[in-house]
Length: 426
Image (tube, rainbow, N blue to C red):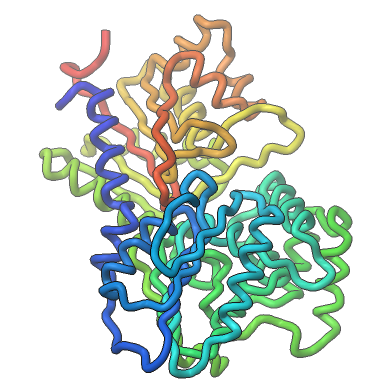
């Protein structure tokens, strides 16, 4: 078995290769007949540039226009017949709304003999933010921030988004009166099409009443009054809701998921098995990061045959009034460091977009010695966990993993390794 830091780097490389957006689009591509009239490409999210470049190759440069929302650091790219708008994430800004408005204007010009190719990746919900009448982009940003802070799931967050915006919840597909083919990188556990990117090309089974209930459940009915008032009006006015399953507007829509968190997790497990390891695997892990870490580690330690346990999922951190810094992958690692202290294990956590929470770290690598190392620097691991201050605690002992932004997002992965005598660090 190789040295542990080298193995960690190896597994990160495997994860990123499995999450590569261009390769995923190439493998998942479905060819279609040439449209009689125009072909327009819309690419939104963190992987938008890589995906649109690959799509241009796949259609053999036969397209009339490409509309791209991109992270600001990637927005300087130039492609023929392409407009690129820099957009912010995770909280939308005025430039996101301007980009979404320009996209909406183009979509309304499409007719039955045109074709729309939609390329969606993590971050598309923020990028395609066009508030409903009476709602502002600041309202969108504020409700997003508050829902995240109060521990809302991605399903809850996107239920609200779908009902207070103009391009989500199937409305984008309904707006484009032409055949629509969407190729999707899923950053949602379970790969629900109506949740990924807030479902711009998918039927929406939720209602404005459901969105209202989310705000009430999370104690936010009075937090953003314009949004609450808008949802109340929608509940009273028929015909204002999102298009539902069975709506004729989806008759010519084809959605294809080309990569997901489960695929990344499977790639890591296959890699370890090829090296002769006995591996257990779980996908779909959700909930509070610290609780998920405890459940995962206890379960893995009881799996006496396995050399490694690999999981994938999308955990959350309910910050409350705490002022710490971190993210789900880092909080997962800190909770595990406390549970695994002085035990023969190592754990790698990694967020596939390269950015875990509002930090410059992607995750962490800890061993059974990490908690004691923190104490030697004056940090109490349990207190840091209670304060949701995983970033500073892990950084102090050199446990953080830092990589450049990856340009994609397929959630989080974690690998727990049972150390053999020959690999335990002195």
